[in-house]
Length: 52
Length: 369
Image (cartoon, rainbow over all chains, first blue to last red; front, side):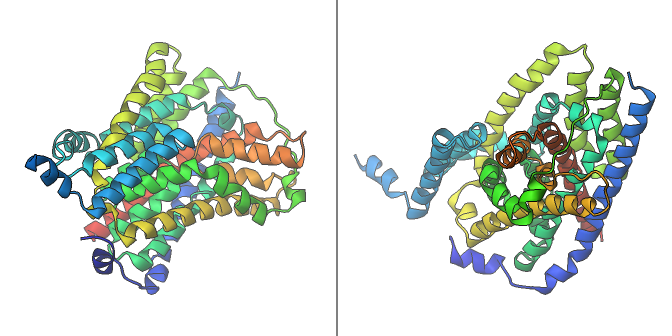
């Protein structure tokens, strides 16, 4: 039921998967910086328009 | 008499190990004060579900799990409370700080690649990666939405490492910075932020993030809804309720119902140990990502930033911000980084939720295609 038996079924060792998933890393970081960039610009605009 | 020993004999060593793990979580919560509001209910829940023939598992805990975790309701409701607790003031005075929040999510995507080496199902390695969000509710919501079989282990890893941020971050920061860099002072200009800006900010974030990543709408929306309740100025009572009663109530239910996944057959696997290791890598790489990004910016900036504030970009709020401030004061007692580091820290909260949405978005495309 536990430990090694199921682990052997669930786990694998496929180093190439790291390389294959690098595209997700690139896209993910790019999108997060893009969204944050837009939010920064919008916040600066709001700060400028409605500053006290 | 027979009924007594029959039930006792039903215990196997795996049940006892899990009960031991439950007791350990309770001990860490009480004695070490490691995220006690979550680890204590989770630890006690673990004891409840690992007693043979327990009517707590197939009964109230399963019902709570289906009612609040399987449909992501509890993490989202908890976000209303968290949103109501956060003051975005330091961030609004210096919006550029949000860049560090984005950089410190690097651990999520690095861990995604690393976990893919060992876990063949993308739903599992995407879910494991989100431990790097350093944000319990996001980790639970994403892992559940993706249908990962490791929700229990992911939750334990996320909350354990959040509690261990004061142990994990300082050595990584010291390794990547020189004493001179750690002594860089950053003057803080107190800028007033209008009430209208504070009200518009959660709306802007919700619209921008959700328009680009629709899968982030619920996560970011509930967080920002809580913040809007806080900032609108006409819902003091609701704000107080969200910050205290709602957040506490949901935390109790969330903790005990996560234990539904803490049964021996689901938890006592080598996979779990691997997930704990990958979670640690995620936190380390998050920290390194933030610090190295700050050092990169310093190559181009006239007014240098203290690279330690990059480390506060992980979402563990407010611990990470305080650690950076404390480390700066250890190097130079006159160096006050708190407002900067807390600003970066709250931006990490926003960025981690957006990162959760991005993970769900990429996963949805993989499922569709």
